[in-house]
Image 1 (cartoon, rainbow, N blue to C red):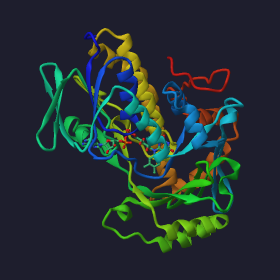
Image 2 (cartoon, protein in one colour):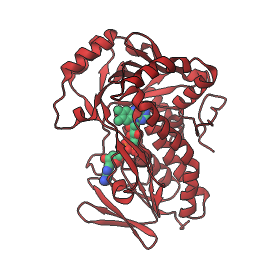
Image 3 (cartoon, rainbow, N blue to C red):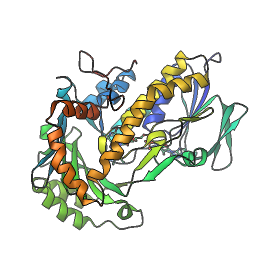
Image 4 (cartoon, helix red, strand yellow):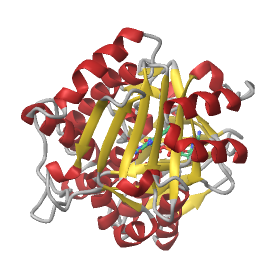
Length: 406
Ligand SMILES: Cc1cc2nc3c(=O)[nH]c(=O)nc-3n(C[C@H](O)[C@H](O)[C@H](O)COP(=O)(O)OP(=O)(O)OC[C@H]3O[C@@H](n4cnc5c(N)ncnc54)[C@H](O)[C@@H]3O)c2cc1C
């Protein structure tokens, strides 16, 4: 390693980029983060942090603040409109003290951003990066205005699921947009939906899905599935349909749905199934959704991005040079990320698609799978983010926490 650490550029001030920046800067590397927005900000409502993501927040010394500003989530429940159980999982299947955390994206963002600003990271905002070029074994980032920044020993691309840099540097990557996405928003929980501390979901076939994630402070994230075509920015939202269908699907949530429709503060989300042929192009490394975007069906994307950030700093500390650190990173992250990408991809059409028979299969078998000992453990470890592959999972420690050390 160069004395004083490596020169590292990071594109994207999101979940993965910020976590990576703090860990790397605090290990002594000279880190510059480039963000397109003049004021970096999160988009969307709330998300579920798993024991894996919470372990990263603990390493960032942010876990207690996150716990005090989010809502503990004890498990996941999904039912059909007729009341048949499709999913019934709890973290306590793995350890009595294990749990997830529902958290507003704005809260998670503020925590990470404050931590970034306390670290020696340099933040360059209002700078959309248009390309990353390899030059003499190093990498240079190029802004939309043509300005070049660098050279860097390593450029970390963390520009999210719809990454433009992935399209430029890895055109052969799989980056298929799903046919379905969702609307999501934050609503006050005046119907006690979050009282069970569960992420709750209702489905009818594969074309209707609504969910509520408790986030503490009496707030819920609400999401409602829609075809991607209806989510295009220029298409007006038909919230009356959502109100009518949502209330029929989940009568107990009628007041929450109406409040959400009246406030009309929905964000539109589309998602991609991203698979890269490899993690890097020389000294240009992809992490977070840019490397392994999935549908949010398993609630893992932010957690995977946080662990990517921690792992990158760890391998750079262990290895004598950047190529060997990237190889170790790929080895440490490869099978976990592959599992979650493949599992999300297999599950997505069972909940969001135009194929009705997938809904019948889901309703017939998934509830049973949550009750049989072997499949129930596989499902619970999948939910908790601790799977390391189709046949393997990490164990939680004696206190029910995930350990980052391999
Ligand atoms: C509806 C929905 C629900 C979800 N629920 C969950 C959940 O419950 N749990 C979970 O773990 N995950 C969830 N996710 C996934 C999670 O949001 C993502 O995995 C996570 O945000 C990815 O983080 P990231 O840092 O890779 O990308 P992002 O958070 O998207 O950050 C990318 C950053 O790069 C910046 N950027 C982009 N392009 C450029 C450029 N060219 N130049 C400079 N800057 C650029 C962006 O402005 C942004 O700041 C959900 C996603 C959706 C859509």
